[in-house]
Amino acid sequence: MIPQRSNRRRPDSELAPARKEVSRLFDEAERYFLAGDKEMAKRRVRAARKAAMKVRLRVPEHNHRFCRKCESYLKQGVNCTVRIRAGIRITRCLECGAVRRKVLKGKK
Image (cartoon, rainbow, N blue to C red):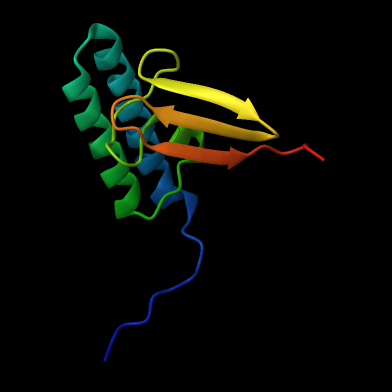
């Protein structure tokens, strides 16, 4: 018999340490990226995503900071381009060519 997954919301006491860890890892990724060590930045992004997935934590405040395809840390104008066209933000990773689109609110 397959154990049933719970749809209950996890208490903040379980998620707070994971949020802290994810934030710390993204800050480290940024520091490594700015220092020129892109591989270490990529490792930190991978570790942050793994920590978030472990407790099923969404990290919308960090979603625009990494490429979902190659897991590179993204910095506008350095290794990604951001364009806004017809109320849609288009982000292109210049390392792997992946494109992400996000509909912006307020466009009617």
